[in-house]
Image (tube, rainbow, N blue to C red; front, top):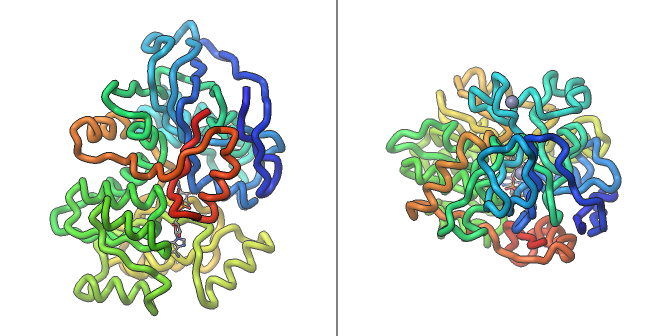
Length: 389
Ligand SMILES: NC(=O)c1ccc[n+]([C@@H]2O[C@H](COP(=O)([O-])OP(=O)(O)OC[C@H]3O[C@@H](n4cnc5c(N)ncnc54)[C@H](O)[C@@H]3O)[C@@H](O)[C@H]2O)c1
Ligand SMILES: [Zn+2]
Ligand SMILES: [Zn+2]
């Protein structure tokens, strides 16, 4: 089959690779009908996440049609249309039973690659480094889905592929980030980043009853989408002296009740702290550029919630004293998709929220390297390029 492979830092190519097979009786093989790029992919494309190997098939946000069914899979049949969360859950360990699916203890066969840095390993994820399990990714004609009964969610017939696709990763991530904020009527929520994840966080925060949502970014089309689709107010951080002061001015001097980081380790920024981060990241002395997260910590009102969705490794100059003295509640995780997907599909069915506006550009799988280039450079207003194998 054809698949998009990582061949080195900033080197992607569509190649012919072996078709996936059923390995375990609880697997299915899915014919991928739609798959998309995520900001997390940029971290290993740019070389900031180790343990990719030449020829790895990438991609973790996808949906498709069941093509082959393992003999112990009872709730799926050939031809079923399903969406699959990016982290693989087993459904039976203590974490999966507690709905903390990205912490699954059974689906990452390479925990020893994560343990030196993280202490304990996460679940496995498709197409996302060997430290995260080494599973083949979804930018391919077919993908193997382990523990299929727990990981495949039927898509209602009336939903289009674009309406269901983002329930795989961008939407449950943003939705979880908003859920972490325990939003009460009257709350003001600020979100750093207006990419797919930040937009989903903003839109979900509105859905959960936030009175005001403020989106922060520098790309005019992304800020426009935040206003139009999520009903957000916006700040272009390149046009203000200080994002923290601007947020204080917008919130009667207090700061937002909750601050969501949907930027992560490749934050763009200005000033001395950013130059310091860039240099240390380039020298591999630490992995993260923390501009957005540091601002979120400083901006949040006393006693507020800091919800971190951006992916991080190791960061210097983390203002822990601000977190501590302001009494912030910190909530964070890789996304627990299986917990949210049924609820998300219901929101689309009920006409309460439709995430398909994230799909700004369509490509064939053969043209996916071009799609990644556009996504990475944010060309032509690209928010998510979607690929049809
Ligand atoms: N927790 C999870 O399970 C999970 C899932 C998916 C993605 N992520 C992470 O979420 C983050 C966002 O993902 P995405 O797909 O939306 O990425 P993206 O690259 O499409 O968007 C990131 C946005 O952040 C903006 N940005 C950069 N620096 C900023 C700053 N200083 N202030 C405000 N905005 C800034 C960029 O302009 C961009 O629009 C990434 O770190 C990704 O790895 C986490
Ligand atoms: Zn992702
Ligand atoms: Zn588990």
